[in-house]
Length: 412
Image 1: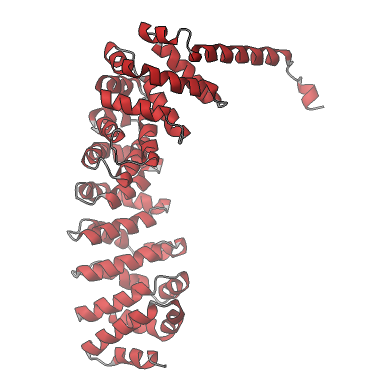
Image 2: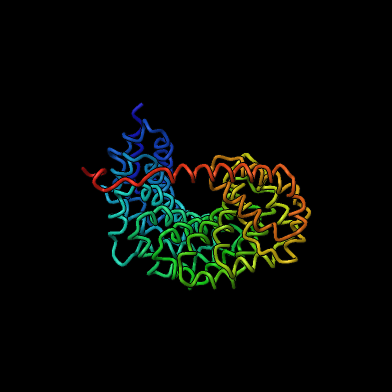
C-alpha cells in the first residue's frame, strides 16, 4: 500500500514520539522476510542514526528494528556493510538493560556468520570482548545469559578464544556458575576447555572445584551435567588436573548424578564415560573404590545389564571392573552376582572383541571372591568361557599358518 515511505519519512520529523512509533512499525514490517528487502533499501542508515538518539525509547525501538534485520544472512550482510557493528557494540555500554539485550542479541546473530568476525574484532582494544565480559556480570539475568551465548558463538574462532583467556574471562564465568541459571556459563567454559592450550589456565583458576560444586547443586539438569562431564574429560589433558580432581568434589558429584532418576540415557552415557576416564588414574580409582555406595553400585550393575545403549552398558561394566576388590567392595557386589553373571554372559556372546575382553577381565577380577567362583562353577557363563577359549585357540592356530609376506612379494 506504499506505507513504508511515509513511515521512514517520520524518522526525520524531529518528533521523538513519531520516531518511536515509526521505528516500531518498521520492526513489525521487518518481521516478514518479504518486507525486509524493502526496509533495507532506505531504512538502514536512518535506523542506525536513531539508534544513537538521545531519547531512550527511540533508541530502544530503533535497535529493536535492527535486531529483526539480523534474522537473515542477506540482511545481516547489508547491515554490516552499512556500519551497524560499531553502533551495536557501543550500545552494549548503555545503562539501559533493554538496549543491552537488543544489541547483544543482534551481535550474537551477526557472530553466527564467521565472515563477520574480522569486523567484530576490528574495533580496537578488544572493545567488543571486554563489553561482553562486563555484560556477563550483569545483574539482569537474561543479559548475562545472552552475553555468554554471544561469546560462545565467537569462541568457535580460536583467535577469539586466545583473546578471551588473555582478558581473564574465567573469573566472571565462575561467578555466573554460582547463580541460579549457570547453563550459559558452563556451555561457554565447555567450549574453552575443548581447546587444549586453555586447559592449564582453567585448572589453575580452580574451575574443577567450581564444576564439582555445580554437579552437587544441579543433580537433575541434563545440560549442566553433560557440559560438566565434557569439561572434566577435556581438562584431564592438563598436567595439574589429577591432583585438582582429587581435591575437588567432581568425583562425588558424578557419583551423585549417576543415581539421579531424572537423567536420560544420553546424559548417563556422558557421566559413565567421564567416570571411566577418571578411573584410568590409580589414585582416583582407589578413591572411588573407597567412596562408592551400595546405591551407586546397584545403579552401575543395572546400567551394565541394559541392552538399549551398548556404550552405556560397556562404560558401566568397565567402571565395575576397575573397582579394587577390597572387602568393602566385595560386600557391595555380592548381592548382584547373579545379575552380573547374566550381563557377563551377554558380553562373551557378542561379536565385538572389546566386550569379550571386558567380560574376561571382570571375571578374573571377581574370581578373587570365593563366593563368585562358586557361582561361576558349572554355570552357562563358564561354558561360554570355554567356547571363547576354543574359538581363540582356533584363531591363533590359523594365524600361525599364515607366513609373513616377504618385502619382495609386496613390492616386486
